Image 1: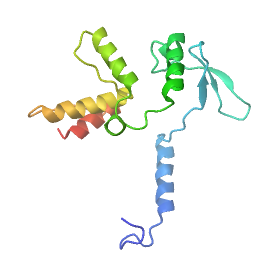
Image 2 (image 1 turned 90 degrees about the horizontal axis):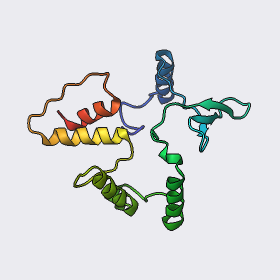
Image 3 (image 1 turned 90 degrees about the vertical axis):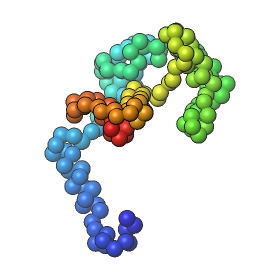
Image 4 (image 1 turned 180 degrees about the vertical axis):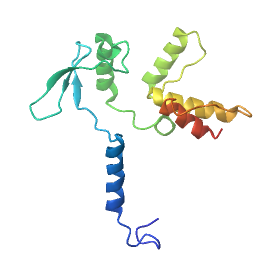
Length: 164
């Protein structure tokens, strides 16, 4: 609704948002993201920039870089070469900006590695879960999915988006 629409006059949006944020604090769900930089070549060491005394050393055991390939010299060299060749960023999603040829090559290599006809890259595990569950469940006739609140949010989102 537009702010000047009937039914919105006199609504105190600042108060509504402040109350919502207060509820998050009371419920212990208000999130503050830690400000860090990882130390190249020194996994799992990083620097934390919280506070006002400058960075302090910390250990970060959680990572989506499970094999530490993000710091492997060959990966870094390939990324530097790609940056110098084509710049940074894809320019948009695949359905808008097209496939980045590096991704096409990587998908072919992954498919070959696993003996499959094709492979598909996703931007994150969350996106892969959400997209896969939503897509598969939509095309399976009479599909029923049993789930609970303890599933990962990506799975819950995929199931919801499937319409099952």
